[in-house]
Length: 157
Image (tube, rainbow, N blue to C red; front, side, top):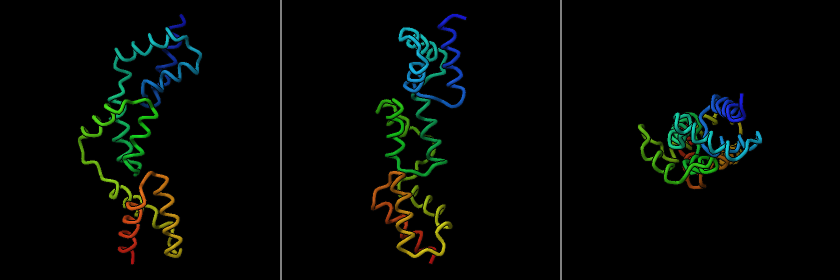
């Protein structure tokens, strides 16, 4: 097995766990000490065989985040930027999602409803403090946090 084949097999193994962005694959190959000319050849080969596609990667990422991890859309975009996806691809994929994207208040409300049971028996101030911390770490702004907590707490009473 030559050097190119060895690093190509490593790239395929890296891609087998979950979809990856081009930047992630490139960084992984650098970490594995692959020469730069081999990295570019592997990236081109992966693109050609459609194993590497930042647009498809970002579509899957956005859908996954919306369905399974309530967080601000701003944070989802930031995650994609960190993974090396271009702004044009991010915006294109978000606008082409096949199902309605919940707005930040809906996402925040869903998260508050999910977490409320944990805080039974705590004072209103303690609940606010804990929930606002959770929502803040998920990238929601203060107005959204306050509105979501107020709506859910109004239903609870």
